[in-house]
Length: 254
Length: 254
DNA sequence: GAAGTTTTTTGACCTCGATCAAGAACCTCG
DNA sequence: CGAGGTTCTTGATCGAGGTCAAAAAACTTC
Image (cartoon, rainbow over all chains, first blue to last red; front, side, top):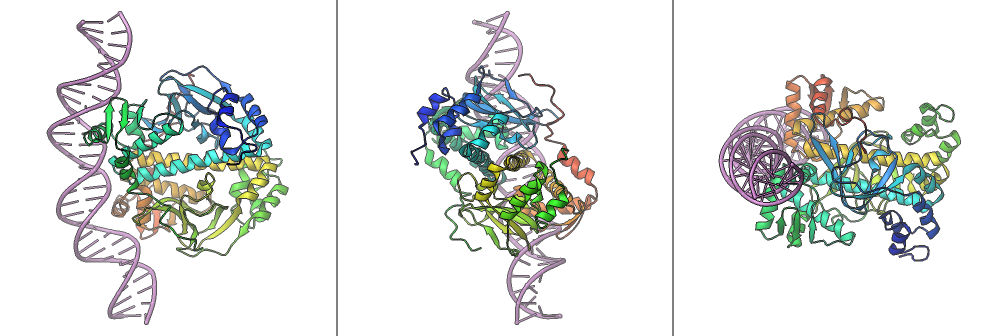
């Protein structure tokens, strides 16, 4: 859109050493020199292996994290041991936003597969953002986006059937993959049925059953963790059926 | 804690004309002159009546809102007409945070009873916050708090039984009332069973049944919308049973 | 205060999905 | 390659809670 001070995704990718920090920069149109300043504070660590923790619930909050490659789950643990998955984080997505409030993480984050992560020291980010207004604005957007997404998730969990939940999950994954340049119709699930179920508030058996049912109905092709979406329209229909809020309303009345 | 530049809750209440903007100021320790600057941008409108909309889904986002007195629900509407409650907002709480991302509200907000609201023009707030670092920090906290709360809600909706949900709802209300100086054990519900059910992902009949069951079990005294908590411990136990995440973990391993 | 509307309660029934259980497919490492 | 461990699938059963229906209580309006 505004093309003057905006630099391209490619340029940012280079500036950020191909780190998905692009997510953080692009939509706001940071100036090149600002990107450099941002890039300077990014830490790049060695990749995590499946099962490694990125952070744990209760730890002091120090960084935001951006997933470069791989996948991460965030989860809480109840005192009786079993865990509740609260989110999956794919390449280009940001983690750690939950913790700003009270200075410690409210959930743990663990790699689902070999995963490369960028680390953004939050203090430095705050310093930067007070001198770069567009960065500050962008931080707000990130947080607000998180809120919208969670609100959508709440709506899903609050109302839907198992069918809708699984359909919605697949659509969401599909869109997120697509946005990052991966195939939207053919992808791997790096998480187990167990983890999907925990995330969606379903038993793992229910998830499994729905996958096979969708396969029978020629909506999906499922082979263990490899999923192909054959009939996106039908999937979409299961979700769209409910909670649309844009087109129903007219002008303000206040 | 740090007492030098921090001003008291009382002082802020006066500065803000008793508006619950205190929520926004206090925890960060704004200097008095900053509070004045903040106060200068606050708009105070005439009270809303029950059923009035504060804003509607799809409207352009311009303000944050702070509830002074009364109560507000936020909700989305599905295309087939029925609404999904996504939140209740009591005195001192902030609304509108969901909309920062894409410039328009994702849900509607409507007064549940006669309700006084403070309006904070977001643009001016942003301007202010770039010159008042602690205000910026405070904005982050607000957003992050919202995220934590929603995450908690997701956990609740994802896993719990009807009993747990209703118990958790009551505890949450109780704590929020208490924090604002109202009774924590004796309060009015300004929302209907229908709305509670919608919020908790339950049928209104289920909510009603649980209220009467809790009454039979001498945990509550319920008379239509007037609720007294007789045995908070038992309520708490229903909730605590699950999702605790602090005490189970040891030190980091990363 | 009677008639009409809305909200809440209570009952009866039935469905969806959790749970239990067992088998199949896959993974991994000696 | 085969033993042991996971993870996934499929079947059978059962119960929590949704749905339908109707009565009761409360609130509204004339």
